[in-house]
Amino acid sequence: MTEPPFEPSEPTEQQPAEEAPPPAEAAPAGPAASAESVEPEASAEPEPVRTAPARRPLVKRHHWLVRTTHWLNAVLLAGMIMSGLQIYHAFPHFGLRGGPYYVNHWDGKYFPRWARLGGWLAGGLNWHFALAWPFVLAGLAYLVYLIASGEWRSLLFRPRDVPRAWRMQLYYLRLRKEHPPQGKHNALQKAAYSFIFVLGVLSVLTGFAIYKPVQLWWLTAAFGGYELARYWHFWAVWIFVAFTLVHVALVFLVDPASLRAMITGWYRGRFPSHD
Amino acid sequence: MTDDRSLSRRHLLRLGLTAGAASLAGACGWQGGPLLPLLRGASRVNDWVGEKVLLSSDRLAPQYPISGRTPERYFPAYSITRPVPQLSDPGTWALEVGGLVRKPMRLTLEMLQALPRVTYTVKHHCVEGWSAIATWTGAPVSSVVALVEPTAEARYLRFDTFDRNYYNGWDMKSALHPQTILAYAFNDRPLTPAHGAPLRLYSPIKLGYKLTKYLTSMTFTAERPGGYWEDRGYPWHAGV
Image 1 (spheres, each protein chain N blue to C red):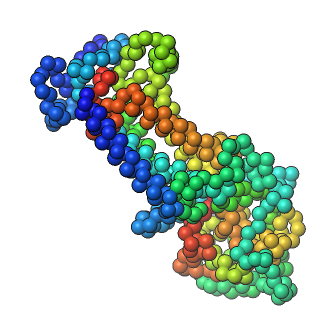
Image 2 (cartoon, rainbow over the protein chains, first blue to last red; image 1 turned 90 degrees about the horizontal axis):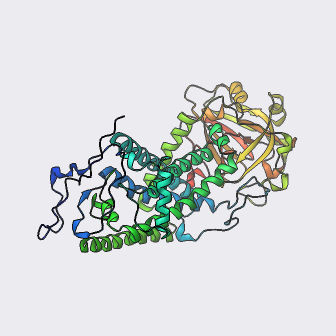
Image 3 (cartoon, rainbow over the protein chains, first blue to last red; image 1 turned 90 degrees about the vertical axis):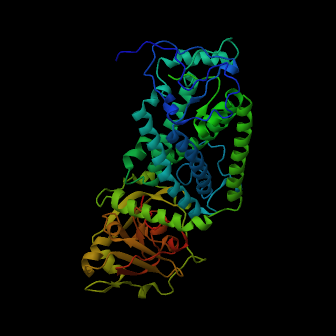
């Protein structure tokens, strides 16, 4: 594949820096939405991060499908986790009856009522099995969009991102002064967003493995059997929770403008370029 | 820059309200309220997927060595009635097989034991999440079905018990599975009252609450029967 020369082009939406009173919301007028251009794999590093706020362009950052599935996913995941904790309530152990039970901080413990959805086991099950389908469909819709639009390029963590992630980590640890150049996302973000999608897939697969351990015996066997699949399914919850906490914290600490981008699609922040 | 800030604040507020509403819903142990019919509909879809898409008529559940058995004291035994239901006169017990069949029958334990015998050591999956391994012995439901000759309208089986009002409904496909049996022995010995004596339904392809204990009758129906737990909201198909 021939790589086009890297162009330090500003997205078409950029406004002249000096333009007097910028229209309050810079109403993202119609066709301008074409800023959503995807440049295939620039071979050079994207341009360095700018800092002067006055020069920050307003760019279209997230397609409506990405925004919709993002927030839908947030709600569905919360429901899946809460109904899952309700189900856990019925037998708070992992391993065959009689034990020994697997190492689990919550072994024999129950989660508070506010953290559970469904009210009782049957309610928890019905919520869990009802929300599972839209959860899977939203994931598939997101995946299809990423592939069809080429947007996966700005998200998928690949081997060449390893040194970039390292430099980014050094920056966050204050062992490096300048923010490494980045495109839409930095390499650590790519790692995080790639990982969390894989975790979603694993949650669905371990879920099916414990839903139909006989009919889908090969899937259950792949996770080490029914009891272990149930154990991994539970672990996925805590990784999701930890991810979400860090994810939300970083939005506010590092790039608050990205919150607006995930809601309206429009972004005016520190990292306007796209890869 | 400033508009970023105010937007963030506004959205943060909105997020907070949503999260608050969600936890409030959780706080009430919410079962679904007005959404309950929707949840029931989804559960029916899952029943359909469970029976028509995921259930195989001939895939056998894996079997385990005898050494893999769960120690009996750790194998839970549930019943609706306490103490455990027991027949006052086991000698007079017989299974009534009727409904949409050409040859209704009364099958005594001896008659059932004379039918083809199936023994397997399999994993039991409880809806609560626990699992345990035991050996079960009995007559395949399919051999009883062959005896009584159900009519073409018979699509479901209803199982009734002497454990108060406990009853259950099965789809024919699951009932005819080669590992679905009318069990009279647990771990090589006659069924104890705790495990459903004198006769219980057993199958490694369903959750425990479908494996009806203390059987009194087996009825072929055209309409889908409910079930003790199913009527209270548990999934109907409950295949594993």
